[in-house]
Length: 280
Image 1: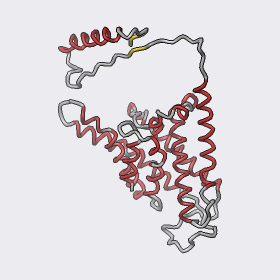
Image 2: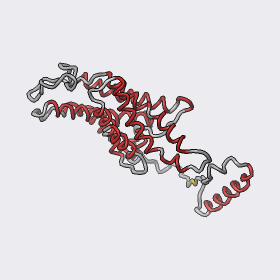
Image 3: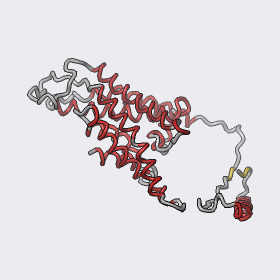
Image 4: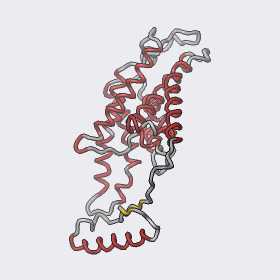
């Protein structure tokens, strides 16, 4: 399950690009580690993270460098996988506070399968999901800065096609989008547990998702409002960006400087035929 959840998270990013998978993958990763703590939870999270990064960073194998690019691919993926592993380990230490009371509750579950925290209510479960989302974002901030940073594959980036949603980035950055995605995912996890442990209570899952979905609706309303804001009096520019594709094996070769420069000149000349106002 951890392996599959990691691959689903990778599929949320460009390549496969099914953005909706990012909303369920964190929940599936936690589901794989449900009931586990300590080293077991960390290993499950590591498997999920390693699967995600190996699948997402496949392009490292396409860089035409001398040596063994596969070693860089494996090493970077192995390092980045420490972060989802740490997330699962930390969140698993905060036991999910799902109560067992209710008409459909199965009180005969063995201790290692019973959801602990019995008697705790909606507020505690909401704090649990909010805290889990905040920890995810904190780890994204760390991986984006530590050791010069590797700010790739932040879960919020997978939502770039959802223009109304990502307008919240004007206020909270990509981390705000990541927080919302993971919060909803953890709330869906809580809703699934509520259904499993109270199968006869058809309303059990509603309380788990009502707050994050209300926040989601508010964000979309805000986003649609931002997208409708237009000012026809503002000047517009037609901009062309020039980015040559230079093999890594030659980019540092000083003997190729003149060739690269002439390539830039040719690309710029071609771009000017588009009646562009600005070339970068």
